[in-house]
Every structure is written in structure tokens, then in C-alpha cells.
Image (cartoon, rainbow over all chains, first blue to last red):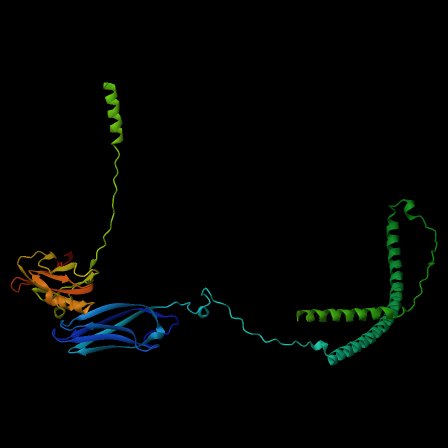
Length: 252
Length: 165
């Protein structure tokens, strides 16, 4: 039966329909049996015998209800006969039903289906930042970076001082040239306007030639290195790095 | 005195008009069901013959009787003796036919073939066992004396009845 019925879990056979034709003389004895072995307990799970003794041969089509016997019990089937005559055109049909959710885990759409959660082995997470050697290396890199930063800062300050001196000289020269050029142009324009004589005398009264000398003198001096501020900046950098690292620790 | 008698008569008549109908209802389902299992077809092996024989290209109709009470019914099957529909025929038609058990649901029913009663075009079978019995009906119509049947559609009726004994 394993090659006849679908091997579906929970399958049950409800009816056996069989058909055959007997060829015999009416007076001859003939017993025809349709049967299936019991694959679990031995014997027969289904057995139906037709007594054709004293009857003319004919075709029989019989429906026998068996009331839902599980597939596991159905062993090999056969049609046998005893007596005179023969059986032709045999046919046996099994009607069955099965619950597609007999095993709820077979289909996620089944009512009692439970999502299987695999066993996840616990892994001890090792933070490489906690390692002493790694921490030492980070500190060493930080120190080197601070030293480089100081060196670069020192170099930058030195360059700025040189640039300032050059800019002062260049501005002084350009200022003198521009002023003399400006004075000449202004004088020429003034003379042209005055020649038109369209202004009243109040417009060209001579102003007193008074000089207002600069009384406040700012002395250039080099600003001292703010080592304290630099230390504060480096401390903030370290704190920032620590904050960044702490958020990754928080994820674990 | 007269007044007293009249009052008593009215009182008696008022008490005697009470009436009630109490119906009793029952349904009876048929214990014998007749079903046409296979539609019959006439073959036309020669110009003058219509036949349901498979050898003549026809199909014999099969009627099934389902009985749930033994010895309570009889099957009465009549094979055709006239066309219910045909072109106009100018000559006589000779009808032959028979009814036989084709299959049974109980081996004991096989005896129906030997115990049946046949008369005219009718076959009667006492349905002695519960279950299903399939009867096949053969029919043949010969027109005239080897006269060609006119073209058209021919229909004949097999009557199958289940009659309570």
C-alpha cells in the first residue's frame, strides 16, 4: 500500500470500493474475498467475502465503509477466490482524507504552528579596547599626535609672524604711492570745478592748515604661547575620543 | 316561568361551541431511488436498423436502483416500443429489446436475472436485497422490410419504475 496511497501524515482510509466480474456456472460454488493485511497488528484490516455459490456470474460493484483507518494499518491487498469459476476485471479503489495540518509544523499557515527559534550559543564578547596592549598603543599614538600637533602649531605661529612683517612693509609702500597719486588727481579735478566759477565764495574758503598728529601709539609685540589653552584643547580631544568609544561599548 | 327557561337555554348553548383541530404531520422519504447511470445511444448499422448494441455502434442505457429496504419494492422496466421523436414514418417499425442485470452491489442480487418476469416489453424484478442494482436495457428498431429510415433524429424512451410491493 505504500506505493498506492500518498504517504501523508494523518491520512485515513474511509471507504473501499471494489468491482469485479465472476464467470461461472450458476450451480458451482465460488467464494471471492477482497482483503488487506493489517500492517501493524497482523491479520487483516479489511476483509469482504462474496458468496456466489448457486448464483449466476455477474459484475459486482460494492462500497464498504471502514470508518477512517489510519494509513499505517493498511498492508498489501489482494482478491482471492475459492471454488469453481474465475474473477475478471478486478478494480479496488480506496477513498481517503487527511488533514494538511496534522503536523502543525508542516505549514506556517496551520493554526497551531509555532515559529522555531534556533539555539544561539552564547559568545563572550571581548572588547579589543579593553586590552592593555591596545590601550598602550592608543596612548602612544595620542602622545605622538599631540607632539606633532604642538610642532605644527609652533611652525604655524612662526610663519604667521613672518607674513605679518612682510604685509606691513608692502602696505606702507602702496599707501604712499596711492596717496600722492590721489592728491594729484584731486587737485586737477578741483581746479577744473573752480574754473567753472559756479560756486559761491563760501564753497572755496581756505581752511586753516592745521595738522592733527596721532597721539595714541600701539606697539607691536609677539603674543605669548598659550600653553594652558593648548592643554585644554588636547584634554577635550581625549574626552571626545572617550565619548566616541563609549557609544560603541554601549552597542554591545 | 317562560323567562327562566329561556335564560337556561342561552347558558347551555354558550358552553357547547368549543372545538380544536390537532394535525399530525409525517414525511416519508423514498427508500427506492432510480437513477440513469448511462445515457443510451442508437447506432445505425444498416439503413433500416437502429440498435443500442455496442457492435452496432450504439450504447445501452444503464439504470440504477438503490434500495434501502429489502423485499419492499419491485423494479419495472419497459424497453421502447415506439419513438417519442422521429421524422414522419410511412411504414411499420418492429421493436425488440431486453433488460438484464449489469452489475450488483451484493452477490445475491445476481439471482435477479433468473428470477425476473418478462412480458411484452416489460421486465419486473423483485428487489429482495438492499443495495444497488444496475440494469442495462437493449433496444432495436427495424423499419419496414429492410426499408431505409428517413433522415432525422430518433428518440425512444425506456421507462424504469420502482413500485412498492
